[in-house]
Image (tube, rainbow, N blue to C red):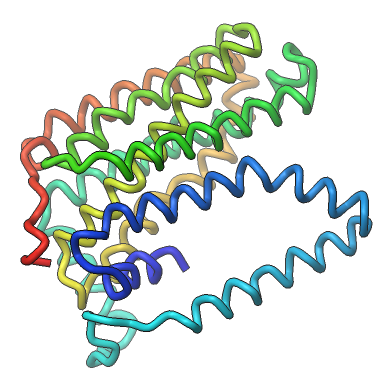
Length: 287
C-alpha cells in the first residue's frame, strides 16, 4: 500500500500542494495513533473482542471505497509492463543514480535496526519494571502520536528550500525517549521526549515523501518507493529478534543507550553527505 500511495499522491494534487498533502496524510495517521486506543477500548467494551475485530476488518473496506473514488490526474495510468524483475531493476537503477536517495535509505534501515527495534521491544519491559506498567507505555505511545500531530502541523506551515536537509536536522529528536528510558527518567520526562520524537517523525515523513515525489519521475516513483520501503525495513525483523538476546547479554539500559547514540550518529552521517545537504526543491512548474 505505502509504495503505491506514494506514487499516487502526485497524481491527485497539484505539484505545489504535494507537501501539504503529505503533511495531512501524516496528520491523519498520527490522529489515529492518539484516538485509536480509546476507540478500540470503547469498541471492546460495547461489542466484545470479536465485535471489535469485525469493525476493524470493516474499516479496510471503507478505506478501499474511498480509494476507489480517487480520480487520477497528471500521471499516466497505463504504462508498459516489463515483468517483476524488470521493474525491480528499474527501481534499483533509479535509486543507485541518486546518491542522496540510497544513502538516506541506508541510514533509515540502520536506524530501524539499531534504534527503533530495541526501543519498541524493550520499552514495554522498562515500563513494566520501573514506570508502573501498561498504562505508562500507553502514555508514551500516545505522546508520540501527539508529537506526530504537531510535526504534521509544522510540515503544513513551512516550505523549506532544502527539504531533505530539514528532515536530517530534525532526525536527532528521536534520541531523547531512548536515552530517557535508558536512564529510567520520570514518566513525564519520557512522555515529553516521545512527543519530541513524534514531531521529528511527522516532519521527516512529510519532507521525505515530498522529496521523492519531486525528484523522481512519475513513471518510476512507486518502484523507487518500493525499494525505499524494502531497504528501510529489511533489517527491522532481525532487530526485533536480536533485541531480547542482546539485552540479556549486556543489559536493557545499554541497548537503549546504543539506540539513542545511533539516533544521533546516523543523522550526523546524513548531514555529511553533500547530496543531502544541497538538494533543493524543484519549482512547482517542473513537477
